[in-house]
Length: 382
Image (cartoon, rainbow, N blue to C red; front, side, top):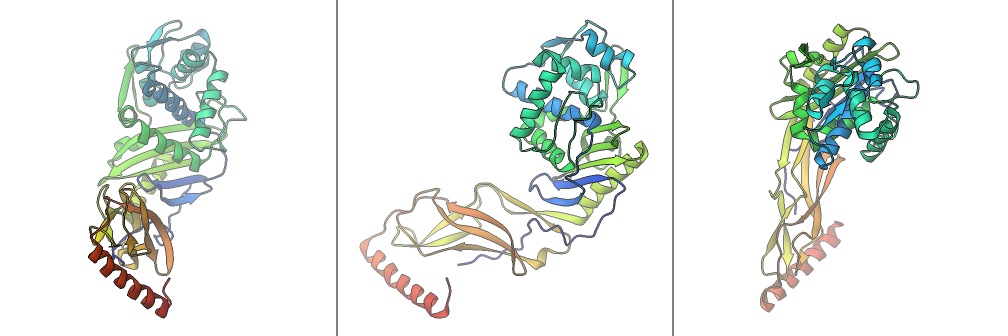
């Protein structure tokens, strides 16, 4: 039994090619985790202030776990003040030495102003030292599958051992949005005033009219101008990570062009929503003649624009399926193809239980099953 769909999947090679001046880059679809474009995506480079995204991920996790509140405050130590505050001449929220700053203000300082003093204060408040906090950062990286990236401080200030990859930072961005959707909104805040000093958000994408709502920029001489950007158009979210550009202007232009290309070149299609059935399976010997099948969750995929008609999908199972059937039992799979190539498979489960039917219907089903089996064996179907 087969149900036919016009369906996409992780088919990215068919889209129009894209070129970028970035040394490292990746573009992914948030919902399906499909890679739409990549260039040196596994090459290690210095994160600069992008490291603060991992700092914030740790902070958000602490808040979600109930170990930290937005109302708590941490001290701006002399080290935080000298290394990341006004005397440092780096990005700062200009918190006075020995002042106490709420976690809420520190988060805004880090996300909006890229505050080094704020990042150090958070690290010292949670772990005692920057080095101890970097161990928390590295543990979180491993927990979410970042195997290559290494962190040595919460700020991204130069350290020869501190490295990331574009692919792993797309994974980090996805983690933050998926696990902390409400806290993530701070990244779209246009400005923040602290200590009577108002500073604009350093992310140039927020003002480009492309639906951007995050994330972060960074720069040190070693790695050039870097950016992680995320934008939403028509319900579709894309995440871009780019590094190694030569100027702020080039960074802003290349990031905008990559996101616009992604939205223009691909379309998002939902094969079925959560709880919807893409097809049924015939039942042998049951109280019902068939059982509806469902996936674990909604299946949303991407296809290059103009390629919908080149894809097809089938519900595949070995059947008729013998009753009784328990609700949630795996019955078959949904298989998506482009030409003769399988490009996506998802398991399908019984949406409801099916009990045994009356004896006469079971006998009739048995006769039907033998015919089906004979036909299958005769024509060579498996």
